[in-house]
Length: 467
Image (tube, rainbow, N blue to C red; front, side, top):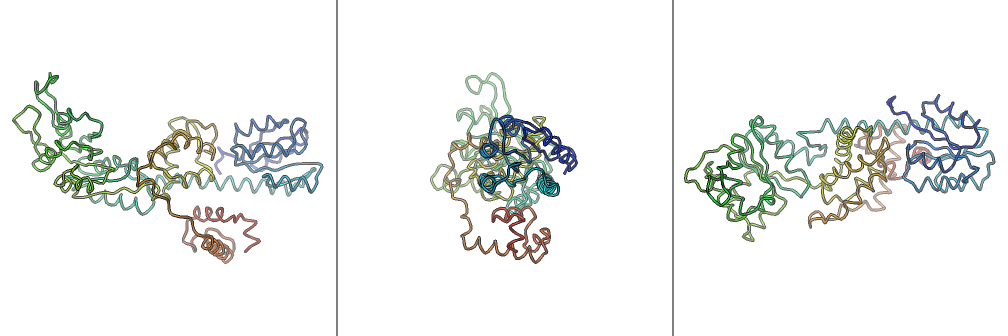
C-alpha cells in the first residue's frame, strides 16, 4: 500500500487510557488513527473520514455501543467494525456479530489478537489498493484513441479500426446511443493518413431541415433570404480531412440523393451556384437505427445505404461488455479526480458490483456521467456503494430503446453455482492456498477469482474450514 494512503482507524471509547494505548499500537502497525469519546461524534467522523476499521466501546455515556454498530451499518460504510468491552457476555457477543460487528474484543486486550485484527484489516486495505491500482494500469494499457476495452468485443473493434484507417473513404458506425460512435470516428481519423487535417462533426438531427443543404454544401451570396455572404459548407471545410455525420438516419430524404451524388463524384455544389467544387473528404456516418429496416420502409435510400455501408463497425452495448466496466470506471475516476483536484483511488468492491450489475440503457455515456457526478460529490478517498447509488438514481428515468431493454444474461442456476463453488474450493486446496496459482489453474485473473470468492461467501476462514 502506498505511503500516502495508510489504512484509517477510528477508535470510540470514553476511557482516555484505552484511546492512548490503541492509538499507539495501531500507529506502530501502520494505521492512521483518529479517536473520539462520543458515539454521536463517531457517526459523524465515520461519515466524513470513511475509516477502514472502527473500534467501538460497548458502554458509552451517550449511546450504547450496540446502537452505534447498528447505526454504522445503516450508513454507507465498508469499514470493519470491532466491539470492545470490559464486561464481556455471550449475549452481547452474539448480538454484536448478528448486527454486523466483525469481532468482539475484551479488555484488557489480548495484544496478539489485537495486532492480528490490525493485520487482517491492513492486508485487506492493501489488497483493495493494489486492485484499484491494477485497474488503473490495465485501463491505460488497453486504451486506444481515447477508448478503453480489454474484452474481445472491443479488441476486435480496435483491430478493425487499425486495418481500415489507412484506406477507408466511406464507412458506417452502428450502435446504441452512448456507445462511443464519435470516438470510433475520431480514432479512424487520428490513426489514418488524414490525422493532420480537420475532423468536422455534425449531428444530422440537430440541424433545421431547411438549412441542412446550406450547412452541408454551402451557399453563394443571395441564394436565399438571409444569405448576405457566401459560405463554405461542411464538405469544403473538411476538405482533406474527415466529415463525421452522426445520426445519418435523420437526414431528410431530399438530401440523401444529393449526399449520394457527392460521395460518388467527390464534387459539391453550393446552394445557388452552378459551378461544382472538387473535394477530397473521408465521410464517416453513424446511426443508432436499423437502416436496413428504414430502407425497406422507404425512409432511407437503399442506394445511399449501400454506398455508406462498404464497411460497418458495430459497437456493442455496455451490457454486452460488462468485463470492461472496472477499467472504464478506473479511467473515468482518474480523469475526474484530476479535473476536480481530488485524491480518489477508485471504487469499493460493493460499488463495483453495483456498477457491473446496473442495466446501463445509456451505455458508456451514462456510466461516465455517473462517475463524474460521484467524483464531484464525494469527500472520501474511495467511491462507495452509497456514492454510486446516489449518482445512478438521477439517471434511472432514462427510457431504454427496445434493444437496450433486453434482459441481461440470467444468473447461473443454483446447481451450477454450487458446482462452481465446490470446484473453486478444490482447486485452491490443491494449490496449497496460493490464490495466484489457483487463478491460473481456473483460467481467471486474480481479480475475477476474488470476485467469485466473494460471490460464494468464501472468505479465507470459511475457505480453510471447507477445504
